[in-house]
Image 1 (cartoon, rainbow, N blue to C red):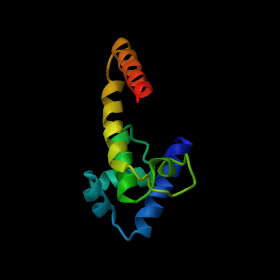
Image 2 (cartoon, rainbow, N blue to C red; image 1 turned 135 degrees about the vertical axis):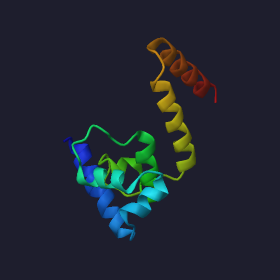
Image 3 (cartoon, one colour; image 1 turned 180 degrees about the vertical axis):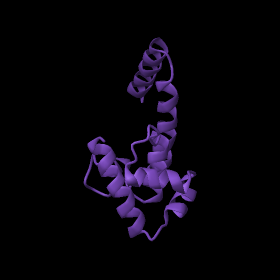
Image 4 (cartoon, helix red, strand yellow; image 1 turned 90 degrees about the horizontal axis):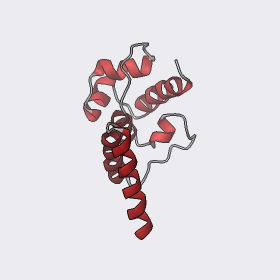
Length: 117
């Protein structure tokens, strides 16, 4: 198991308990099953891993940043633009599914648009 999975498992459980949530109630907030939350917390060796969107929804439900949840930061700050971030993450997931040529084209278009702002 990766270090990220280990840290994520510990932090999800710790934050869930700190907020007084059950696995079932957290799952309902996020739109996943109680069993899936249990799998995340127990670091189950199953191949099914939470998507970026699921991690983002868990972080939002627990009022922390995704960076904190994944162990990339030790600050529990909630990102102030979570709706915008969620929209970008959905776009990123779609872009990642494109073939390489289209993906490069989309990235260049976005970079060009940002430069003109």
